[in-house]
Length: 373
Image 1: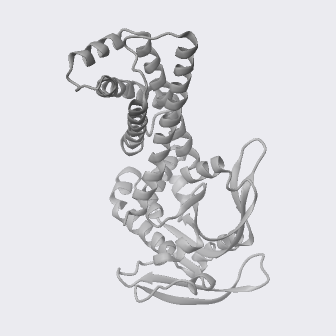
Image 2: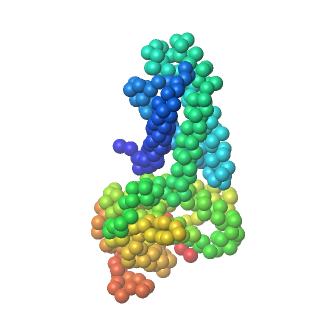
Image 3: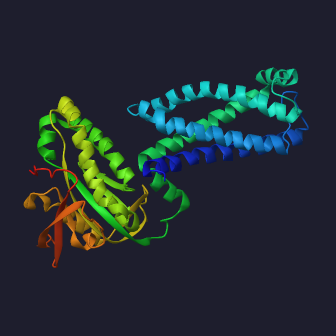
């Protein structure tokens, strides 16, 4: 079984292969139309037959997938703090060197297929060296530049608005509003106002950035989707089936806690404080759809969001770090791993009806001492 993180990475890499394949087909079709209309040919150009076409499609898709892998797993982190233009420029330089290597490998193979000989044949390399000084080489170079540019822009857009959101925009999934059942977690950093006043705006922003990076693995591994960052609060959502499967939504909370605790020394070193958070959980029906005139967004609307926010706000009064609605707990199979303590019926601000709430902690780890302020 692939982990949620691996599945997510594969889903993010596949579009690179599709982008490169589609652009290659567009360029190839255009070239064939031009050559046929002008009745021109070149000794360096590879004549496209069925075998060459299949090889070219597989090769280009493979290169796209390789670029996606390098981009998302390595270069993205390397240039994470650079501006958009600098990031694209630096990556293009690196990828151009990569492209020369790809041409060196792919062209002789394609030429050997066309000539029906082996790669080391003198005819193949004569054709290759003719290609390097021809107009075809410049057009190939241009094609690679365009493919790289578009795939890198896609990567940046996907990174900024979220891969899932981008795919939903492309597919038009929420162009027409849809009703869904979702679980929500509203997680709020503790003592954020005091921390911000102590650190100052710039230092506090750096802490927030590190904080959100450190809790992201727990969210991805639980199949959670980040809905919003609202200052020091993060709203995470699950499709109902994914959220209750293996108690993913609850596991997410405790794994976020664990990951922050593991890195507390780093926060102490850089900021002289260790961030912590409290969270509220609830589920219900929401309407999901695209909205906005000047800026499009996919948003959720429904009483469940307001209710979850109100549940989270009761953490301080109850001196606990997690509060879950019994409505959600009734659908979870917590077993012996968790201990549940009822908080009784509670009246939420702005609500007429009371709601049954509970807090819980893991048996497998020592319960933490609440440090709520």
